[in-house]
Image: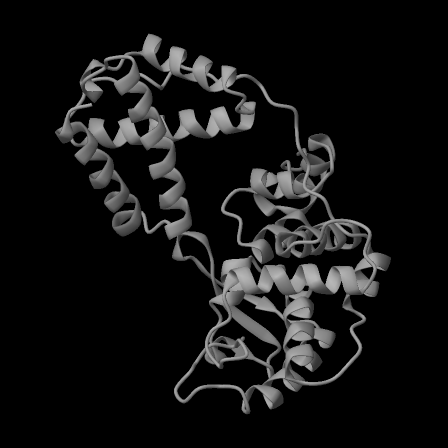
Length: 302
């Protein structure tokens, strides 16, 4: 493609980062998907975004399918293209969105996994002493207690956790802030970790969770520690940070049936996202929503 066309990908990524305030990870995914589309355009002699039409986009989706991409991945590719062309329309660089009417193959509903309450209790029953054990116990307890995302947990500073009130202040996707309660076991684990943390922290370090070197613990390190403790505790399934979040949502919804409350705790903008996080059918979710959301209730007959 012409250089000026590729430059618009850079402009779009800046728009996502600075105006829409999307995470670095999300911006990288958009860039990867659009770079893939640009490479396809090169192969098929499409010189500029203004030359791309809906038939090209359908052919691109078909190429992705033949190369073994899943329907879900193709949906993401097309979504990235649609969003990109919406941006180009806004900037008056194109006159139509060629991806608007193109659909991906339907994918089967993939439900996230979760650990049942007994296996979660076994995983969290960590024995031992020392600063790293105290840190890891606090991480796992906080994941399950508050349903935090991995990036939310590793981004925590000392000032974000209030053990007196039993709350944690979290900055989630789209820089949206929320306050989430901390359970009793997590409070105890965090209190013990804070005592150990003093001996590890480098001067001026504000991060809640630290590496052995005394600086902020990385997401990759947290993933490795979660896997370590799952093996150590004899959990017979793959365990990863987001599994705690889904288990948190599942167990809370099963016991409370408060869909709206779970939505708030997870920081979901739309109730449909909470639906994906739970493996309940939509009819059941709709019934819960009707019972719990004030504006969903039908007016009483007069």
